[in-house]
Length: 247
Image 1 (tube, rainbow, N blue to C red):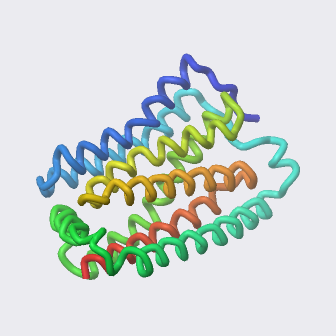
Image 2: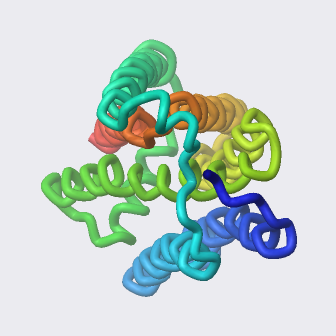
């Protein structure tokens, strides 16, 4: 059975968790941009802090289980993961198709991304990524491990706790808005120009929608596997487009 939500103990933690990634993104993407090793250290430190926040909360409250006991009884564990995987893979392939069509059909041969390649290359130089192999390693890390980290943080922790306090639909909307918020800063850094705001708006809404669907998959199946697989597919497609842009 899920632990009841306590606004006095859970409220401040969830409030911090919703906005901490946005604050840290602003610090290492804008405030400390171009400072090389120091910026990289701040980036990794921010991931450690945000990663430990749910664990600290978990240990502090001695929370026993965040899964729905009725769902566990109704659907065997293996079947839940299988269903989650299939739903996540289907949505993930759909997202890949949308991203690649958007890039190759609507963006690649326009001037909308004219400045993006230089900006991406500058960020790669700042991160010490100076070869194709280094880019592949970074892309693999972001697509596989970082996507798993974000599912743990946004779906398991924030969505998981909010749905103990309110209807799951509202919890999904709020957690997805928080998930979208810090990505807006990332898009802002990479998409300058007269019409950059249009792309930022469209891509941000897409990210928020993706986060919402991943909440739905987690809610329906009780497994994070599908959300992670889907997230991984989306990140791989984005990394591919990034490679195409800097080439």
